[in-house]
Length: 156
Length: 282
Image 1: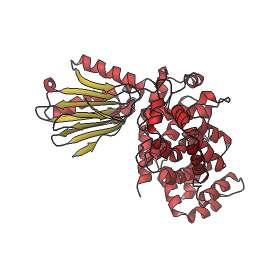
Image 2: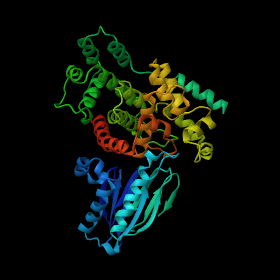
Image 3: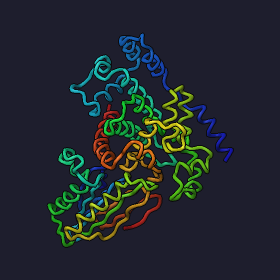
Image 4: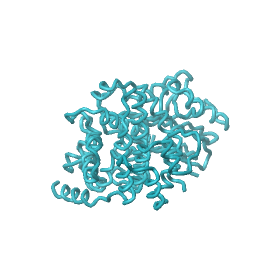
């Protein structure tokens, strides 16, 4: 079954499912997969740090990278995923044209993700991040395949 | 492309106007002698519009303490300015709630984007402690109206437009290079033909290039920033992605910091979802 993950949301799924998320601009799309038991999860987080709106983060941790990423891993562990087997991929984190310092939310999302992963000894297997593209992600939980499409398509 | 340009202008001239009820109501609200009973009377004849106004009135964005069930109550609690905005929103919904070719927006996405920019713009005004601007909701709501006309032409010339874009050339600049006009200018032309106040027309015209207009207005600046922010968080971002330039000059002028943008983004998303879900439900 196909499940759509909206902005500021996260879903986990099993073999036979496809997780899809649309319109990744500066938001982070994070895909985590356990190939042995064929389960996976997708997070579509909007902003880097929950401290700018802690109340919102309490209601919806998936809005922020620093609260959403741990929740995604927890959800994968809860359905049997094991850290040593996990394959992690990232997409999104785009930035508009020009050099406007205030609009680098995408880059900040990516930095917070990398710090979190580094602290927890998790590596990104692959990524399609940055630039001005609006990305759509198709994550096939049977195979673990992640397809990122913009105007064209490419496999991560 | 002179031929395209002629065709585009013909389309602008034949673009739908607002419904009779809406036009009547808006001029009534502008008239200081109109009383609320007269407005109610006109609305009674248009149950669709009344239902839409009540749905929007009850959205979480306005944060009313109770559910509003009548137009009179809505006017008392929100005021006539808001009523004007909601009448417009309802009419604009009928025009923009469809797929937009060229920018590849799915049905409802331009409507969602328009509402999002209105909400984010009002929230930026509060967050930056700028003077209140009652026109900002409407200016933001209508900023991309031109995409409805231009979309088909953008689709036909997509390759040429794509080829022009680069690190230094935004999508809207590329539109202008290839088509001789851009969606912001087309939007401004439509609103001029609808007899909208010039400050709203200019906010729509310059929403991508506020630095090129000789007059600097906070209205244009805020619509400009709110638009880029909503595209970044994926609300109404088309196939052209983030090929737009947020002006550093505007950022400096308003004293904008990343935290302002992030706080506004964190609030906007849920307000928009609630607003558009209500509208979609019957």
